[in-house]
Image 1 (tube, rainbow, N blue to C red):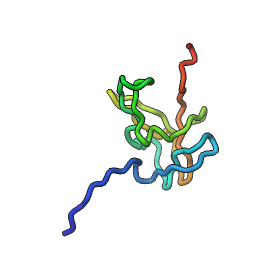
Image 2: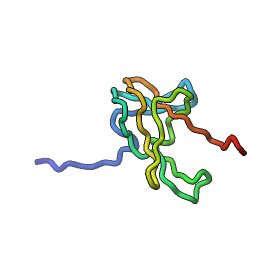
Image 3: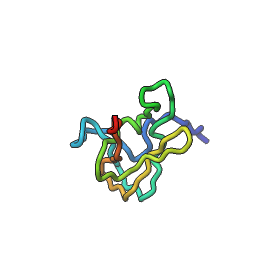
Length: 104
């Protein structure tokens, strides 16, 4: 029996990075995902970073949208990217976020 190897995968199976019509590069589905899919950890709390989080490859490539198909869910020291809608093959994964505090 062949030994199974566990390799680091920067993105979950079924996701890829490519050119986005929204901005630069984006995160795209290469297969269909149901509502409520938890794609993985997108951010890890770390006070040494300006916004207080380290972004994982998953967190570094989804773009902002006012009509998102995903949301960032915080649990303890982690933020997870979770689908709000059914994601079809070819869809860009998006979430609503701000790179600044509008009250500043």
